[in-house]
Image (cartoon, rainbow, N blue to C red):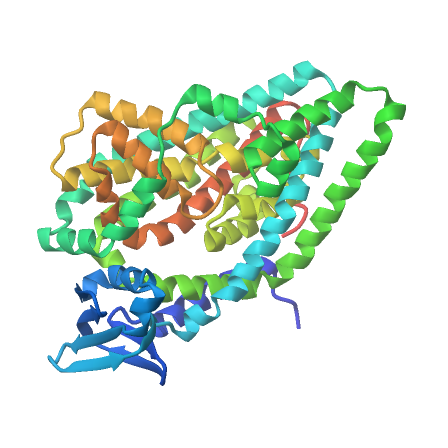
Length: 496
């Protein structure tokens, strides 16, 4: 029997994971109460009263996050006397004493999430040594500093231009579809209430964008600390600088280090091959837990907003990138998409372009992109190229403004383009950080930042899509740079 190709295994895992999560969802109105006598699953609750010797607090179903937080903050003395009254939708009341724990209901679909986290962590583990070894070898192989400057200039120009275009495209779709006008007032209020606490936490995490501070922050004061902390932009700077110095040193003095980093890069690539054998299991677990936790019903509520984001992302991925490659390279577009499909699927399931980087580099190698291009372009892209994130920020900003009946002028929207470009460059390649950077964009445009509560329910699913677009942009840039540098006369897929 012929073995099923890995990319098809991942597709099957995605579909089965989504179905598994939909069949076994987390119950929104279920509460697990732990007492000294054991645990009890409470279904269909509508309100709860948390009582201690010195206080009584009432919480509705929409305030369940506040209930959990209030219980977690109880002192040891308060915990010893903690009692809970839970009112059900039939108006009956359940009473619990000596409460030791409160938590959301979980399902089998969320129980298997650790398998997905394990797969994700394995990829992250490989990413740092792979980036360090590949970048140093790539920078050293370029040799001529003028060539390095030219390659670097083309790479950054590609990322900046496509990012600006992506934001503008997002603004265009949002203005055409007017998604904010389709959200009923009662739905707005429910979303704001349900996600208010998480929105406040994201607002606390956000900070302003200062271009000069960002430039200064690229240079690490301690490269070993940057490696330990996984600060990709610091690692990229150090590795490129290290490789450039190696390239101008006498060969007899640099040879040992070059062999070491070549070996490090090769071992990392072999590790990727092994870890990818676990991809179907990890993807299944991640997809199942995502759908089980967030559900698909929220997509119906915010359908026009989701449509605007998805339409923009797909247009950017299937029109903008192929258009650039058709002009500047000889690659066949179908060959390109066949070559990067594994990276796209992993990016979709993990929502992390940083974790997907080892797979992206392997796909670029399979397409025939020389390591002299891919080892520089792709790690840099995983750090600063966030076209999908930038496009989503443009749509989200206009959507939230429309909900709050704020008219954005042309100047306001140009400001969103500039701020979102800088914010996307400074966005870490990990799940969910784009939402934090959206706060910066909203604050710059004078849009209430608490409006992110409106989109939190669908953010995880859209994060998966925009990460796939980010990775597609990275791969497109590697082909563009390799082709325009004359590093290849023809790119062809070596492996399906």
